Length: 137
Image (cartoon, rainbow, N blue to C red; front, top):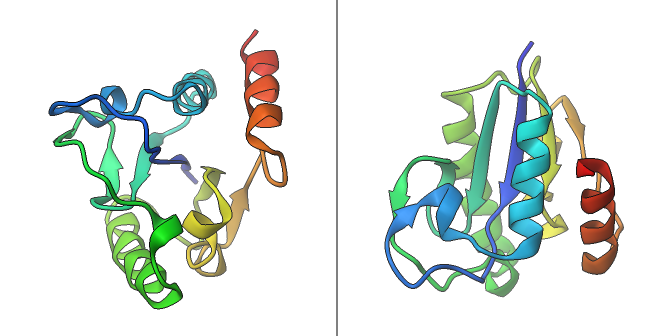
């Protein structure tokens, strides 16, 4: 069984092409990534509203797209694409997934995944930041 971390993209980005892990520059994203790296998991990916499932080292252009502005149908289509990408790197039935992502990023993914955890679920942004800072030390 593998453990995979999925971190949602954020609106705050560099203004130029960069590796995905460097493109997103919000405090929440950086702390989530730092915490994910401390967990010694088998894989860390970004859930991108534009690109779907992103490996950390994939170079991408900045973009202005978010699931928060998509219709339910568009989010469902996005999730189907992400699930197809996930199946190529993980086993949705046997692997464990840890989400650092909001409800709209998870809503159509978690029903298809057997084992998952959402450590920051139901916490507001400020609370998420405090929790991450505390666990990172």
